[in-house]
Length: 181
Image (cartoon, rainbow, N blue to C red; front, side, top):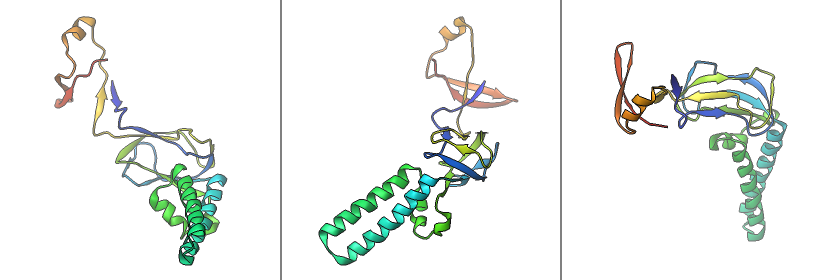
């Protein structure tokens, strides 16, 4: 049985309760690192983006005043607001865009591919409410797959871990490595 490499596959899920606005990748599609997969909306995200916008403005104003006590407090609030957006899964680039974003779109955010992968499962529809941590996609790196072979105990005793092997697929040989479990 051919399986996805469990070390290079990952589940995509929102980190805050959200509603699916639109899909940007679908089952079987090859996606590139950074590519938008799904656009979501969250009231929690809207609040966090507004807090970041205010904290950023206060931090910039405090820096221009050159008052250490005010500046330190403003920087702490800015760092906390930035950290919250990061914890919610926004990339550095997405956080920077909040400062340029139309406030009417606050709450909208995209989940993006973390590498060049294939969408192997997508378990959502547009308009669906998704709880934080609920997997909505499975992305798999097909550059390294696992073959699960059930063999007799006699054969299993003869095969050593970390030895070379070959897998024949339609007459094409692929190098492999044996891992016993």
